[in-house]
Amino acid sequence: MKKSFGSKTLIYPTPVWCVGSYDRDGKANVMTIAWGGICCSKPCCVTISLRKATYTYDGIMERKAYTVNVPSEKYVKEADYFGMASGRSVDKFAATGLTPVRSDLVDAPYVKEFPMILECKLVHTFELGLHTQFVGEIVDVKVDEDLLDTNGLPDMKRIGPVLFAPEGRGYYGVGSLLGMGFSIGKAFQKSSE
Amino acid sequence: MKKSFGSKTLIYPTPVWCVGSYDRDGKANVMTIAWGGICCSKPCCVTISLRKATYTYDGIMERKAYTVNVPSEKYVKEADYFGMASGRSVDKFAATGLTPVRSDLVDAPYVKEFPMILECKLVHTFELGLHTQFVGEIVDVKVDEDLLDTNGLPDMKRIGPVLFAPEGRGYYGVGSLLGMGFSIGKAFQKSSE
Image 1 (tube, each protein chain N blue to C red):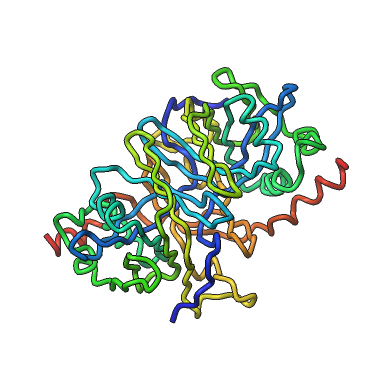
Image 2 (cartoon, chains in turn orange, cyan):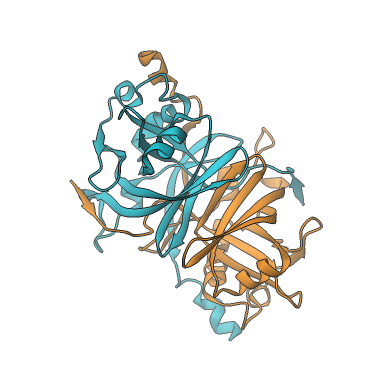
């Protein structure tokens, strides 16, 4: 039997991504979100949703750019802090000792210590209700080169991204490799076609 | 040092969600996506991006509704198959032996065997390029009641959702609990404020 929870933002998993932006005065800010995802393959775009009340909202509207920074497990406390404090009243980089790096490609800072960074140029803004959805074109993806696998791609386990459980509020790491996409499902193709 | 990958849809993690819809003739279909996420808290909305070429695209445009079904690890092969085959040429429920259930709330079917289901009413359609982004209002969230934790919320580890690594194409399970949100970051608040 299934239990109904009603209309809730309750789905597993959601990502833990830290959004980097500059404010009007050029101060680097970073904010953690779980409401976001890839939304287009051509052009390559990633979407994030923010409340208008956030300081990051103002920064993105001002600069038309943001970065999406993937924290590794070891930075889960910093990521949590980035989601609690406001850049309006505190310098979150200074508070955590992490390093903002000015992007050469977009008008936004990224987090040097985080293993995977997307530099994004704002291309759409959609008003959905409490949240505004930003769509950013991914100009570049940067990954720590010592965390690549033998195929030259980012190694999921070594990047060590973090998941979030809405409502319950737990952060989780990534578990085992279960199989390869566009491959393990072929068993059903054979029997059906 | 960071290595540049250029403009790619490369970020970790992305979810593995199976989108349920009816076609014009009322045949239940299901398709796996990794491009999606929660996008608004009020109203509660979840976004999914689909190419126009997919059969599910036609179904959602016709019925203005979809479900988002979270497969558990044990159904990762079925989920992979749902992303490879097209409902235009095959009945994916019949091929896998899974059961479509007609939603009482929206004009779309859900996957009975999957532990977590969102029933969604289409509220926005945004053309982004290769992908169309659908925004669905979450009318109800249904979860297998034997997979709830002691607080009555879906237990992340027992739900066992699946992650996807774009480019490398690996599927991964969920690992350990790392800490609680809006809590473990407080250490930095004390030192900075």
